[in-house]
Image 1 (cartoon, helix red, strand yellow):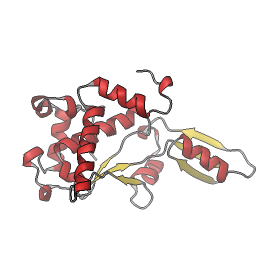
Image 2: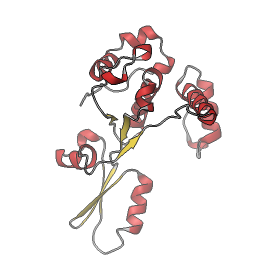
Image 3: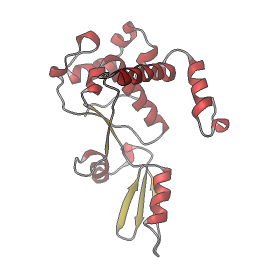
Image 4: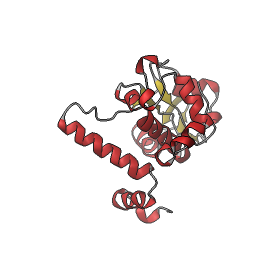
Length: 202
């Protein structure tokens, strides 16, 4: 496990000098052992799976986005080879009697309450503030144990066909729009795609 100190550098809007001077990224590059950019060597990767594990909240999603941007920009082959994953820790714990289940977000919580907790008895709902708040047993059960955790593989188009090449270019353009130097591109994307854009504080 390699702990990172908060939000890392956004490589989509940073110069190579800043990337090379960033301690968190240097620690990550050294830990993986496979280099970056033109010096990336997939056979030197020290781990079969690189798993991004962050809190199940907005800040955690932002950190995960910054890390995925780093891998997309500097180690794209790591994603193409299927080595990059997101851990999906729960946001809620729902308990009724001796039964405990976990919900990954508000929608999942509401679904569980409607479909699986229809009987009598007090229902206790706890919201996790972060991974650091979880007792070790629950952290292992929900996020660390390969038998019970939930992982999501990060994928990108592989450029094997004309259609995939077009999709890959569109993916790259979207990453640049959402994570790059031009805030107006992010604003336009939010205006076009957000369900509740009038409630967003931009």
